[in-house]
Length: 117
Length: 327
Image 1 (cartoon, rainbow over the protein chains, first blue to last red):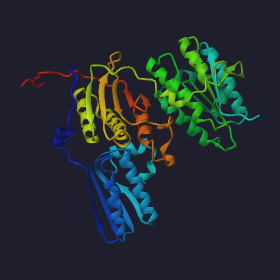
Image 2: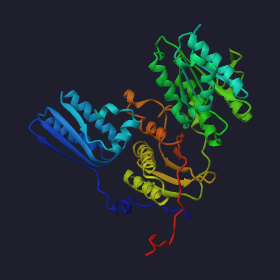
Image 3: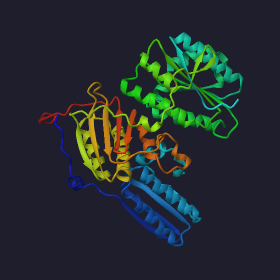
Image 4: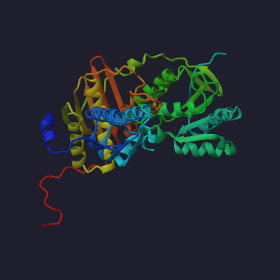
């Protein structure tokens, strides 16, 4: 078996994989943040920024929909924990909905099951 | 008498001596009202239950060969039990545990990590005087070097119910444990120099797909390697090198190694439960649950993390094959 040489990141990312996306929608005093794709260390700060922006409006509750998240790592998980903390500090109800297998797996491994309830 | 953490080696030859020694230790705990946890293999659990009779009802058992296959999972298991039963630092209660981390089937690479684990126990529970731990070692099944290492890593030896100081206990600076080099990376490997996690995950997925590993396991491998690579990006200079190969000796074992320029300074990283609120170490904690062995070596020159995943089915890469439907 040959030793394969180093592979450039450009070649890899050119293989059209959907990137991570975060969007938010505010309906009255309710905010919904939708995460999709793969949430890793490189994109975790986008979750944090979006949450901060949403909290600047006058919302009573925030729901983070992770139905379309195909992958999340411990840094992504930390951004969700930080989001919960920020929401609670602001007296805002916080809920994560739509947790699929990849999310449940990492949450379970980290012993953070209460994040999903 | 001011007692620290009591970490005792118990040497036995054969199952009967094992049972006799362990039930005496367990019996003292149960009659003293000390919560007791025994982590040994399933066969020994059966033998102990039979010998303890009704007293077994007051004892917790767990299978060490699954719980502690990766020895880095053992310290967290003890810690959880200690805390659950009020025996942590500054707490008044006592707990008593039996754990056999080394058995005849352990390979050389695992034995090194088990030795490190035993040395780290002394660090992890230095301020936990309420914890008494008995570590059985089978002199009839293990190499004399293993027995000798056990004498180095255990401050006490249990002999006929008496607890004696070990004649050759060595206090170890834990940073020295992690400086021993790993065996060389084999020539036959796939390699990626990376600066992004997406590239790492793609590389690992592609490799998993071509070897016929099942999807759930493939996802676990991708997640584990991603976590180590994330540490390279965050703490290791923003890039790293990933190497993947199958073990020569045991072709079912997949090995993934990440090398970077960072240095790990906490010897217990990844062995503390992050749900206690710690921000650091969660990645390695998760990795230890996902893999069957993780070897970490670190120095000012850099860090190498080698992960082992056992019993992965492997389909050899097929070249020039036409459709199986025969069209």
